[in-house]
Image 1 (spheres, helix red, strand yellow):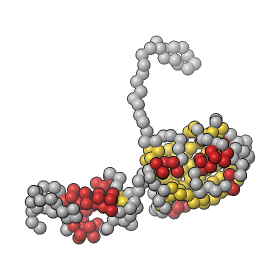
Image 2: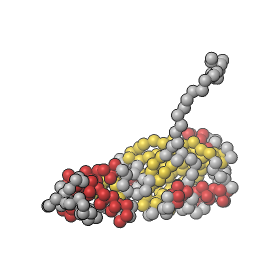
Image 3: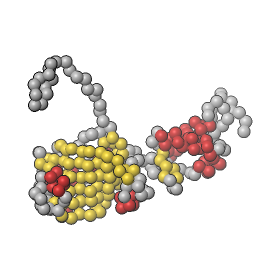
Image 4: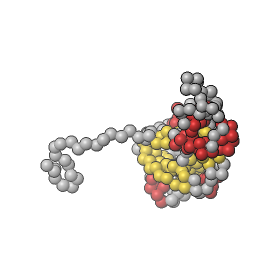
Length: 266
């Protein structure tokens, strides 16, 4: 291959010799492919095919893909290949619904109801919902999808006294909208914890992931007018969700400080 004249524009789909490293040229070709030409979740050609097509080494291909994966534009699945990444749903530490978050990204949410029922939750859920021991509650399990692709499994308990007949309603849309429209319950506050967990076989199968894949797990207790309504655990694909938080640096203010159970500290 001959050296490329820097004064001549590089063809959009060709890797050439010159001052720009080949992996950087290929990276930009793949970037355009991932962002403009292929829909989210689409497979890329194999490393071998890319190396043949662009007349570069597989090491060069691997470096270009690694850089785009680090940027979040590509994802790798062992034994399956490389795929264009789906846009990550963004939780900004506020009480909002999956449907709201998805629509704000210009994407199409949908749901599949997996199971519903009425049963006796464990002691912790009873305490979270303000239920007496052995008092029944509604259980709802749904698969949440974006553009037809599964991104989350949600397993929740709902206070039956606040939402009578919930499991007889259409639960394929926004539950938060249903609670507001049908029950007059606007979920206005909540407490949420986030943890990392490996997917069990059932959850991995629902999310089309290998077993033991990393998940983000959100546990939320949501209330309406100080009444606990929902105890929900959501299991998100690790490549489909991100958390954004606004951080302010805490600076101690001068002056006396109140010490609970004691006296002012000077």
